[in-house]
Length: 332
Image (cartoon, rainbow, N blue to C red; front, top):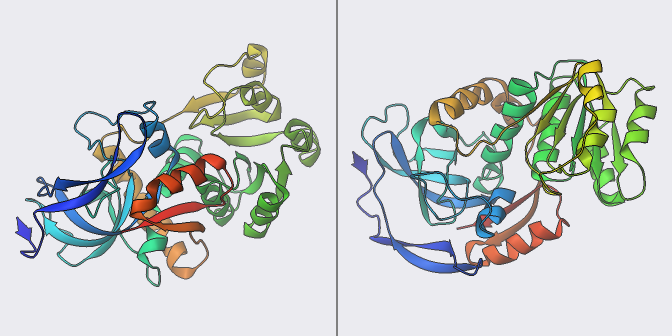
């Protein structure tokens, strides 16, 4: 093991209280395990799963830290046994299963990616969770292809702004739904071919008009609930629906005739509980296909708000208000 001898014995973290709140605390600093690196965090991304964990709805998988936080960016200060590719002092961002809301965080070496050239740690902290999720679901699971049409619900979210850019970079046509004219305008500026304000217009009717009744090839949905049967009406023959969250509830009534008459594929996934080998394969594809686009500026992270770590509760409140566009970042 290689370790920076100037490391403290303990660190500040943000932990979840029994009442479902967030509070600052001190915890011992843990050495990285074999195959892991220890990151001195400069910035941490905030995500919906953090809120769900705080609410008791999304417990960490076995062996993961109970401290929330799924993506961090900073500098490697210790290497566990068996880590070969990375070195002390490397500036990286990483996908983690927990522990991000802290001054130091351990991460599996194969889930670390270099901070793209010209990018700050604050920008890089908004990459791992959303980019791993979008690539895995849009390209690996749904098989989005050049020339196909994609519908993204929640176009102004961190997932949404990432999906818009990645899909356009690979020559797809992109429609989004969003809850305000401000968000719709932003999504169009980012590259969306159409943005539908779901508070003012029926997205089923709008998609039908935009596609001359054909429907879309892929839908990325994090809403669920009554969106599910409406999504089926938006889908073209042989289309794929990928469900990655259920903000409006997990239950829906559907017409199964639509599924087999249009040969639809309905799938979904969560990322956090998947093993490191699965996530490492995504990391390799991102390194090869997406990181060059970040370094060229063809794709960029969208940062809405930056707050200090001790204001994590304020960051959660902002995310729950859905007033943000893109990512909320905590600085350490």
